[in-house]
Amino acid sequence: MQTRTVSVGPNATTPADSQWLRLDEWAGGQVCFQCVVTGTVVYNVETTNDDPNDPINPVASPTWDSTLTGITGSAQNTYNTIIGVPRYIKVNLTSGTGSVTMTVTQTLGAPF
Image (cartoon, rainbow, N blue to C red):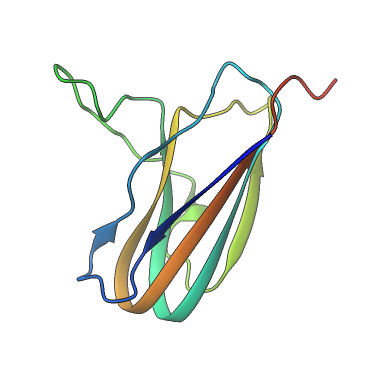
């Protein structure tokens, strides 16, 4: 299992993005993320299968999952192998004053 944390805030100019966090899409298992909010903010959790670091085609299309858009409080969610594991994940602070800290935990290996 691996655990990593990214943060946006507390004095970020909105909108603000965390760095893209690379996941292991071949590991299987589950990806669980938890966002902890301080202050009053609105944020999105974005995932992509594109490579935002690709020097030729750095396209990063964020997820269109409406449950991960316009979040105002702390939140937690899980991706599993049935849905598929995205390649990258980040948090995007869209407005407000405060911060969002996202902790991502990925199990390694298939859950069955």
